[in-house]
Length: 143
Image (cartoon, rainbow, N blue to C red; front, side):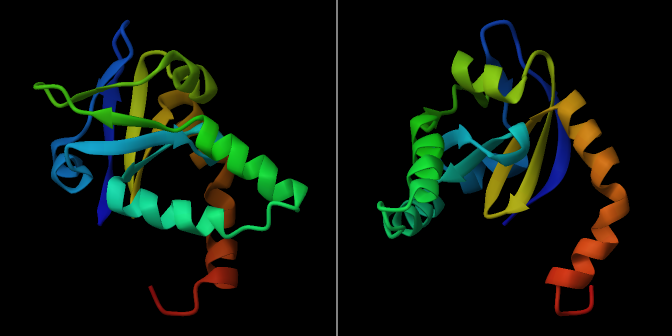
C-alpha cells in the first residue's frame, strides 16, 4: 500500500526521483498516465492490469466511456527506474500535469500520484473545507 507525501524536484530532462518507500512496491516496471485533477497516476503493473480490465468492460457504445478510456490510455507509458531511482516523465505528461520544477509525490493506497507543487497546494487548500463533508457522505466507518 502506498501512503505518505514527499517533496521532490524534476530536472530539465524530465527526471524525478521516486521516493525510496515506493520503489519496491512499484517494481522494476510500472505505468505512468494522466490522472484526474491534473496530476499523474503511477501504477505497479499488477494494479494496472486490474484497472485495464475494468476499463475494458465499459460499454464502448457510451461516449463518456470512450472519452475516458482514450484520455487514460493515450497518456499511459511503461516506465523503469534508472540506477539513481529516477523516472523520466515524458514532455506530454509534464505539460498535462504542469510539472516544472517542484513536485509532490503522494501515496494513495493502490497508486502513487505525482503533482506539481503549486497545483497540489491549490487543490489541497481549495478542498480542505470539504473533506469532512465528503467523509460523511462516502465513509461508513469510524476513522
